[in-house]
Image (cartoon, rainbow, N blue to C red):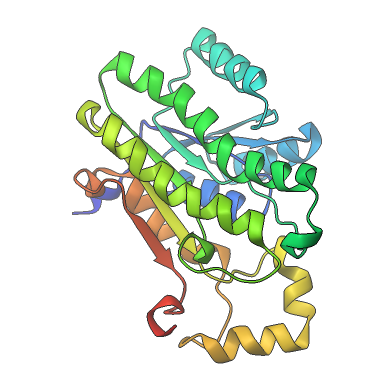
Length: 255
């Protein structure tokens, strides 16, 4: 049964993986046997994260590029083609948050959030899927959604729109790519203890609200997303397509 979740011989690209959720997912896939490609915009932090995984005996390489830059993404995949690197699994994790009421939100900030959280997933997955289809061996695309793929909150309108879009983009990918044995699914994390959420954790009122509104009465941890990511990356999910799995401690179940 454990072979269903074995990722040996597979290569996984995890965007936004120099720290936080992305790094936890990359390490989790590496533990399951995958060779992982770490990504971020800063070469130094990507190199440090890659060294951390390699020091543990995992197969890892890093490549710094901006996932919102279509040409940079195309160049990265072209270089992997030249190097004989076949990307079998893509986890579109790169994301940013920007909190401001919609009536005060500048278009440039709206666009930056949409580009990073939604459009980049399309750009990266498109490059990967083109190659997966050409090879005829299938593949896996995992997009990182959010509780806001399902439910809105004030002051995060752009993020909510982007993560709602992730849910429907995942379904669109499934509609077009399932016949090529590509499974496209998404993970919707709940409130997770990350650097991006540290200000919320430090806000006593918000911290109390998270804990009181969640049946689990606590924040989640990045490594609690790993099991779902490994499942969606493996043969165990070969007939699962177009779905978003919420890993939220039960938060959405009681809204």
